[in-house]
Length: 117
Image 1 (tube, rainbow, N blue to C red):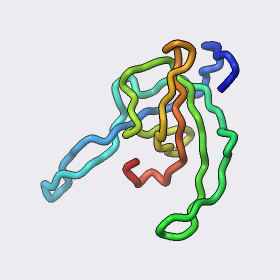
Image 2 (image 1 turned 90 degrees about the horizontal axis):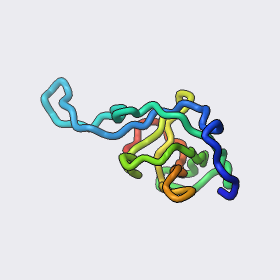
Image 3 (image 1 turned 45 degrees about the vertical axis):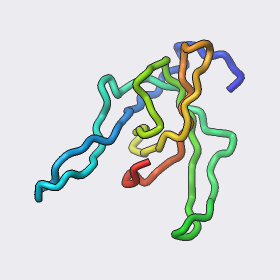
Image 4 (image 1 turned 90 degrees about the vertical axis):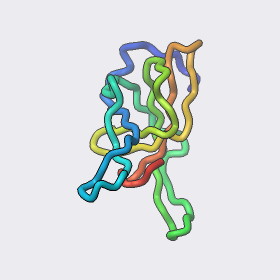
């Protein structure tokens, strides 16, 4: 990201989620996704230069979509979380600090919403 960021560019609403242990109907501990405190934040959405495409995985060929989100600087976001944007889930792959800790650039890849990062 080479352009300077202006606060007015953070106009898209995203939800940040993390896994939390819960119990299912049988009393077993399972992981589920929950919105973090102040999890709904404003962001600038940038479709990555790599765009989308196909990669080879153990299950065969899989498609991917790379998207970067820029948000105000926070200390509670980790790569173990995911972002919900326009009914689609994005797994966080990397987090970069931008403009001397004023903003974060969150590098993501689209997911089907069922995987755990």
